[in-house]
Image 1 (spheres, rainbow, N blue to C red):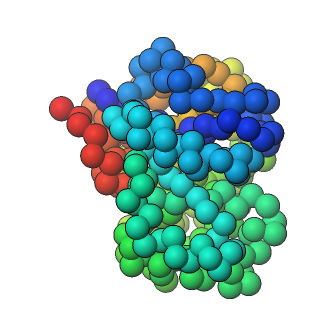
Image 2 (tube, rainbow, N blue to C red):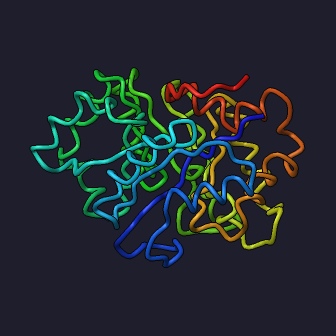
Length: 272
């Protein structure tokens, strides 16, 4: 089974934010070593906002290692000059789509004040998938998904309450699950261990993960890590899904662990 991580960050400068490891850099070479140890075949790079050069770093990693890395890139969507970047965006090595976390309340205001209104139809026309931390703004995300049915959208980090853990992390689960009715919406099951205060194998979040899986299905539920802020090893992030979830087996497991992500994004990795 080929395992593909749906989210990692690489950086060479800046100060990591949130709970990410306070490292001066996390390079492609370091990621590849960790992937080898964990049995991860490929990873989708999300350039982090704290390093202004991270987009170029990700593209270079994908150029040098086309069978190991691809990219969901970013640009400043509030700048008028960025509007010309959509056309030809996927011509860059390994570039498969776009991703904005929209963590800052000022950035989330863009969803309501019209700043991002140009992004969704432009990405829809260009066939460019977009990922966001939509768990922070599910009502706004739903309106975007409904208005642009041909735009593939991905909800980051299980769509849960980002700053909560255990039962509190699932406080908006019903609202998240309602989005599964929209066929253009998928969920990245990234960062799951972060949501539990219990030790591996995080039994108190397994039922919640199963509800998301059961509702979205194996073709719209993508395993991944966000490894630089995980409380466990990369290998344990893998085995949490491959060995500790008895309801995830066979073809479903293969889809969740990489094939479905590649199908959704058009990432032409060989799975034979």
